[in-house]
Length: 419
Image (cartoon, rainbow, N blue to C red; front, top):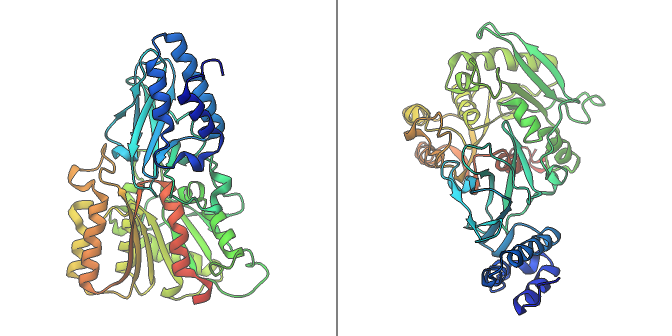
């Protein structure tokens, strides 16, 4: 390297060459070594050459850069005026601006997070431009808005089930049965997909059923059919039927949509209880027992799943809520639980600690802190004597969060050794 004759760069090159594991050791601050050297240069051409060579090594040896278990460096190279990080680390509200190294086109951001945190983010280039994924980051997840960059801190453990999905690939529905279900309670039809376990056609036994709100999103972004296939094959869970109910006008503001259905809508509850469940029980070999029915939902879907279970515990014995919107309508469901008799319902729920400003563009300010809403639910469930499990993770309100921890809940409810 032409200009890597400075002692700092001899050290830097050796660190970069021995891989990512060495890069997170305390006192081996690769970026600081680089920063000190490049800022000592007066000639802008020489500075830019150092930047280019540094990024070339970063691309070869791993990114992001970890100064230690809790400190990370994000980078962007480009001829722009400003770069900001928009993501879980700022509750998707605050823009965290990168710093530019003078007389270069390199910007950097230093963050301090939990060692096992997993955060999602976009980059904003200049003002009023559409966000982009981080071009240096190969780890990508998806949601209804598209691709998002993923930052996993050094002690976060990616699950091997998602090895084929680390660059934003989505799950597929081709092998699922699709139905259009009319409703006398709602003035429109619903598309539902049904997953059948691998041994369904070769046996005559009956199966428990898992019902997913936001069905298409769970299929595509949480890759649930893949998860179920893998976990059943590895005998981590018993074989199950899964039913995916997709709300109308998905990812559109047009009504009706998931908000109108999941906001404690009793007509939707009637549709679910009197039309969806009988359809599934009549068409497929299901175990007709509340302990063999599990409701699952995320966010608004977590809210309605718990509501359906509470009102119909004679049908549903299990609920798993992911980042449930329990602050909805001034804690309406929490107040309902508090004033009602305790039901025979097992509840498993979790939330990310980076969920304090969810839906800032459309949710009332006093309801945006989903983390505190879930903590209030935990408190009232304990007071009422419910059987429940509650977990918090250093993550945000994202499908990357939900698909990972769905595995844990499925093991808890459907572990083959317990069945």
